[in-house]
Length: 436
Image (cartoon, rainbow, N blue to C red; front, side):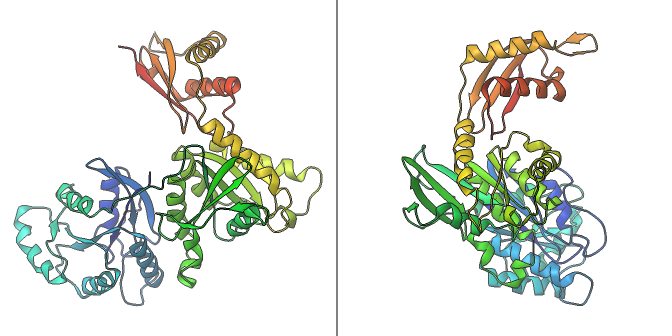
């Protein structure tokens, strides 16, 4: 399900990161009382009134020569461009400043819904001071306090009112939707072209609901596919091309609409931290994953090179130990034909259901092999298990005390389930519930 996007925008040191952390419920963004400390947009997810959304924390916008201000301004403008709704954050203690007016000018041009928030209004006596902020031209200002968590509900009520309808495409259940994610210059576009090829039957190019994304349906034999290509990466010129983390929001949107996600790595450059962050979004979203090592033709190889590279991937991407790895070259099209069978397998396993009786036989055999743990004299008892969902396969295990199912034993049960049923290419979820 595609989510709307909210950007928190404002000049430095008005408390954007504090509000961001309040909304997402954890300390994700750096909070420090120094202007300009939030240099990169930070992405996370929030929820309010049963509405789920992406939220972006930006660095402050300011006109001047202080360190990082130009890149902060550029990244904020990107966030504004990506957002469906903008929270314009100001500081109630300082009143309306020239920098606030500069930010307002940028926001006027965006033509996006803007919710004006006046932060650091920590007590009722300060509320009279918020009326000056009407002059910014964005309607009623919402007094809030990030440090005390006051007023956020009213502000978020207003934000949710402006969410657009997120319509989904009508594709048949049998159609496999997949996307390619990864850093810029890993060869995603070249790989799309190599997958399609002249011999493929391209049905049509349809503009997707994702902003600037192109859906390309095509068919091989009886199997229909849709490639979700985030074309916006090539749209905006130098500001966008040089902002590496711009790829993250594009990846999030593509992931939400995919059954299978191809995590593309540049074999020449090897694995870097950004690769792991982007792949982590696919894993957390519960999508099937295939790891694709592109530009394999450009690597000097011997008989051990592929095995050694695979071992590095397994170390760096330990959370994707279920994902198959494909080595190929989009440029020469060598080994490209090995990719679709892995996509098909991952999609099939992502939708796989297992018979309850067989599942319980596997669980009981696992318990016999490795008895359940105890804590403070109480042993975990597993009564029975059942599969409750697919995409990803999700299992509920009924037990006496859910907190006794520690991570290590849950991992053991997951491995036994994988040994019995495969599930290559897909994460699986295990939920412990107390038997009533």
